[in-house]
Length: 315
Image 1: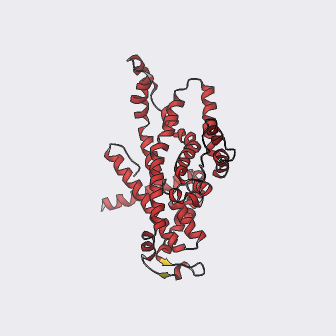
Image 2 (image 1 turned 90 degrees about the horizontal axis):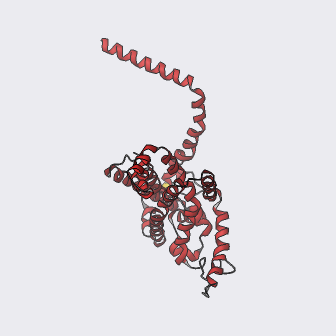
Image 3 (image 1 turned 60 degrees about the vertical axis):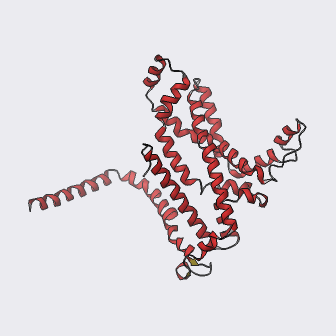
């Protein structure tokens, strides 16, 4: 009986403490409201419309009154040649972005961290950050002016070596390379921010001890800096793996044309094309749902692998 009374008293005490905490920190909780509303309205509310993938939906009929068709559109999806092509291209481009794009900000952050002149370091950081704030529409125009065969800078340089102009924008052969290189150029500076922040948290005495022991700068980077930011690298890798299949749409939308279909058609653009251009809403919803499921599997798998290798992961 006494234990039950104590439990009730403890629960009341915790409840009063919670109320007191909320009242004392009401300003901070009020600041959270826009963030909470954002996730409810933008992230969670659309989950209701996932049922469109399993219904014969028409824009003239409310979602809840559309006819259930089960896995009909998924069957059509997996038997569609364009979907298989889009999936293949998405996985290949995602692989290139991981292999070439993910290490780029790490390498740049290591190089920036080695700069001793503070003023020069700040100027360099600002310059490499700037492309992140430029719209893909603008970058698309810049790329077209650089790569065109009619007076493009790259082809003018090629012409100096008495070579024929290269049709970078009229051949699918170069499309994936253009995507990866332009993506790295745009985001590599912005991606260094977290790595540089993590490096500032490494104990400087470790570098002093390594210097006394005769370690050169490369050995210090290899044995002190990289292990010191491993947790950041693993976390960002897991996040990037999960977003690879759902990002890059803006870039593709600006640079894509039908000539590039064999190399450049990816799942996000395929969903847009089927849903908004061809009005196949249920089919597009099925493709988008499949894309999201694959992304979740990638995140979960990479998290499990990181834990197997001794890292904390994110789940």
